[in-house]
Length: 339
Length: 274
Image (cartoon, rainbow over all chains, first blue to last red; front, side):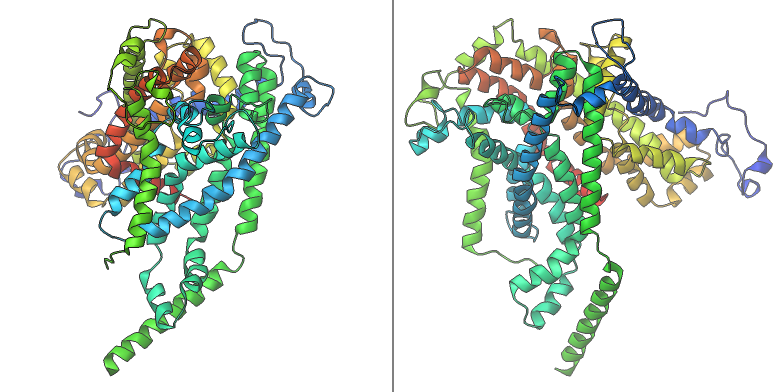
C-alpha cells in the first residue's frame, strides 16, 4: 500500500530524529496515523458495543414493543415491575433467576475441580499427550445446538442409548432431579477441555524446581499440591472461578435444546425468560430492564469472588517462596559440589 | 524431563478419551442408520446396514435446506473472521506500537466494555438491526461482533512482543506506516493472526442466541439455528436430526484436527489475561 497523498506532510522539524534519517516516510509523524489504524475498529465498536450499552438503558425506560411505532416513556416502571410481586413479569423473572442460580450452584464445583484434575494428568510431556489433550477438548469446538440434539438422542427415555444400556426407564430430560443432572453433565462434558487448557497453561508457569526442592525435603504429593500447586495457580483459579460462574449464569442453549426449560419451567434459565420476554412477547423494555438487573447481579457476584479470593499478603508470601527456592537451590548446589 | 506415566494412568486416559469421542462418533454413525436401526433395544453402536437415506431425506426437504445453511454458515463465519481479525490487528497494532494522546483512555474504555455481559446488547442491537433493515440478513451476523475487545487485546499483546527493530528497518527502507504494517508486521504476526482467525470463525459458526432471534427465513439460517428447527420438525426421527448435526459438526471437527494447535493456544492465551 502506498502512502496517502491527501494527508499533508508535517514539517520536518516536528518529527523527532528526522534529520538523522536519509529518507523519511511522509506519514510517519502524522498524528492522524494511529487513528486511521483504529478507525474501522472504533466505528464498529462505537456502533455495536458502546452505543447499545446506553441505548439499552433508554429502551428499558420505555414500554418498548419492537412491532409498534409508539413507545411511551414509563420511567423506572419496567424495573419496579421486576420487584413487584403483583406484576406479570415478577414470577417468570425470579423463577428464571432461581433456575440460573441453581445451575451455577450445581455446575461450577464440577467445572472448577474436574478440569484441574485433568490438567494435572496432562500438563507434563509424555507420549500421546497431544492426542489426549485434543480428544478431551474436541466437544468444545462443537456448538451448543449440535451438543443439544446429540445428547437429546442419547438421553431419550424411550430410544436413548443410555437407558437402553442401563436397562432403565429414567426420564433424563423430563423429570427432576434428572433434568438438572443431565444439563450439568452435558455442560461438564462439553466445556471441561476449555478450563483444563487454561489450568495447563497455569501449571506450566509453576517452576519445576519448587517441586524438586519439596521432593528433597520429603514432601508428600498432597503437600506438594496444597503448598505449591494451589498457591501457584491462585491467579488462574480466580480467573477460572469468575469466568465459569459467568458462563454458567449465561446458560441458554442446553436448556433450550435439551429440556426446553422443563419439566414445568424448572430448568428455564433467566436468559430464556429474558429472550422470551423481548423477542417472544416483544416487550423489549422489560427485557432490557431484566438484562441490566442481571448484569448488576453478576457484577456484584464477580467482585465478591475476587474480594474473597484475593491474597492479602500475596507479595510477602511470594517473596518468602522465592527466598526459600533460592536457598534450596543453593543447598542443592552445595550438596552436589560436596559429593 | 519426559516421564512415561504408568499403565494405569494410560488406561484412565484412554477411558476418558472414549467418553469424549464416542458420543460424537455415535452421533455421526447414527446419521447412517435407518430409523428402525436407531431405536433398537439393546442399542447398537454400529448400523446393521449403512445407509445415506436420512441425508437424502434431509437434502430433499424444502423446509430444511441444510446445504444452504451450511453455505450460509461458511460464508458468514469466514467474512466475520477475516473482518474481525483485520480490524482487531490494525487497532491492536496502533495501541501496541504507536504513541498518541488518548491512547490509554481509548484502550481502557474498550477493555472496560469487556465486563458488560453479552446479553445486555441483545435488545438494543436487535432494535438497531431493525432500524438498519438488517434483520434476517448476513450483515446482522457479521458486523455487531466484529470489533471484539478480546481480539484487540490479543493482537496488542502479540505486537508488544515483536522486536522494535522490525519497524526501524522498515522506516530506514522508506516504508510508510501502512506498508510497514501490511508487509512487515502482519506477516510477522502470522501465528497470532491464525489463532484469532480460527477462534473468531468458531465463535461465529457456533453462535446461537443472536442468529436464533435475528434470522427468520428458512433459507437464511445458519446451521445451529437450522438444527434447532430440525429438532422441532423431526422430533424422534433421530437419523435425520443426526445427519443435520453431522453436517454442522464435521467441518469444525476437521478444522480442529488440522488447526488444533492454534485453537488451544488461543484458549490458553484467553486465560493469561486474567
